[in-house]
Length: 509
Ligand SMILES: NC(=O)c1ncn([C@@H]2O[C@H](COP(=O)(O)O)[C@@H](O)[C@H]2O)c1NC=O
Image (cartoon, helix red, strand yellow):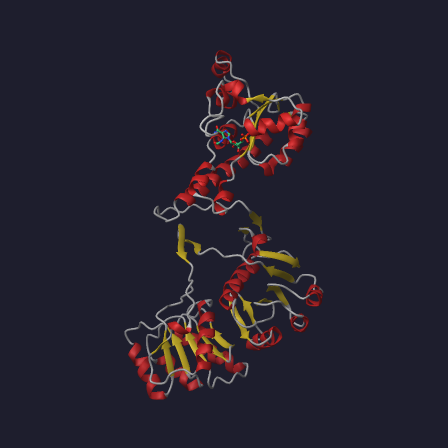
């Protein structure tokens, strides 16, 4: 028989909200309730009989609540094996009450850390007794049902009501799984707090908000997202986001983060790279000029704006088939237009910081690195040629460099008047990336005379500046650092090009 009738429950919870229906139900079912200080008072105030845990331990809660349930009579009541003769006789010998249900809601450690509390307050929010109760009850799931978080109260209430006081082995094991999820996540959070300075080269990630995606990168692959999408975005409309949508949204948000404080800027991305980008005096113009960057690739793209989207912009966007639109907000009439396509995903981006550590799988492990948080500014530009870039060219160099940083390596970005003309993306050589960019820009009738070129890494040879010069490019930004830098500088000097070095490489593999 795997169904067990519950006769006693220990309840010790931090959050008392939501507890009332549970204790009422347990009382109605004739279950004896044992409880700790604040929880006991809460139950008693409801007019329900409850046994203080002190009556079991013969100890008061001591050391400011650090020790209240940590006692053999409590843990014996949870950990005894009901089908083990020796356990059963010891329960009698030591007068230990049988506990069939344990309900715990832990001290809110993570919330306390996030609130910026003092170290002492944080330390006091490391739950010791509660986590021990959870682990003990979950270990003994054959006999005990463990409710380990207030988020599971409703689930538990259904189980106990449907079973009329009995619980099935299946449910007890299901709740034990939840319990070990809670306890391991809790300890991970504590470790990561202590390991803030990253002294231990150990990686502990605990994501509890997993979402099953329709599929992975392709329909025959499974896919999941672990993260808190709702903290980052309010989804106003459209179909469920796919694995690839999420990757594109990530690329879009990271790119637009570079233009947060700039004039209205619009970007269109495909396969994580921008195919259109423009900064203008209003968002309508920015969209039109971003689209002009590559109206062919824009089909099915991810669109992002750094300012609210107005009606004229929405009318233009509406002519295009696009997967996702992201903005800090939408005018009402703009939203109405955008919503008129059933599947179009419309997101409002909330003001929230992205993590500053990047993680990806590698071989049989993972690679971890700091995010490339360096954005090239005017102060970073070291002019290395006789000719210096004009103020307009400097604006374009910074614009192109910001985009370069968010484009797959090897990359070359060509820009003019704060508009992306074209980029070469993810090429195996820098020359290929440049040729791809020039060819693409010319195919969309961009006049590259006076355009600027940004390179994510140094030029190993002077071939790139020569090709760029022949296409009409007048100014170049690159990190520098090649032993043959001087050859590129010499070419620029001989041919009237301006070049600046930043000293910062922006590879994106
Ligand atoms: N010290 C102990 O023995 C102990 N036993 C249970 N707790 C926690 O005390 C809280 C409930 O306390 P109260 O019922 O006094 O409001 C729960 O969050 C529970 O996880 C304890 N507190 C911290 O470790």
